Image (tube, one colour):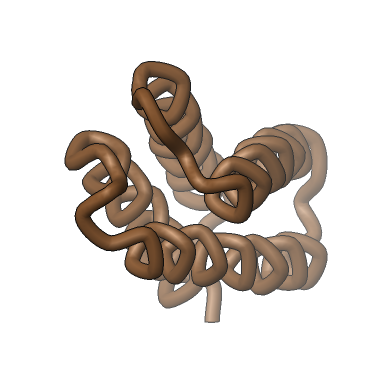
Amino acid sequence: MQIEQARESTERLEQRADDAVQAMQRASEVPAELRDALTQLHQQARQLRDMARHSGDPQQLIGAVDRLEQLGDRAKQACLGAGRDTDAALQSSVVQAHDEISSLKKQLH
C-alpha cells in the first residue's frame, strides 16, 4: 500500500471515529464500557492519522492499526452487549468505524 493511500484511509477512519463520538454525545444513554471504548478509539484514530501524516514507516502504522482494531472490537462488543438500549445511530457509527479499521488493516497487511 502506498503511503498516500494509507494517509487517506487514516483520514476516513478518523472521520468515522469522530462520527461515532458525535453520535455518542447525542445519545440519551451510553453504557460506560462503550463510552470508554469510543473515547479511546477516537484518541487512537487521531494519533494514527497524525502518524500517517508525519511518518513513512509502514511497520509503525501496522502496529498502530492492530492496536486500534482491538479498541474497535471492544466498542463493537460493548454496543452489541447493550442490545436495544443503544441508540441506532450510535450503533451504526460504531459499526462503520469498525469496518473502516478492518478495511485499513487489510490494506496494510
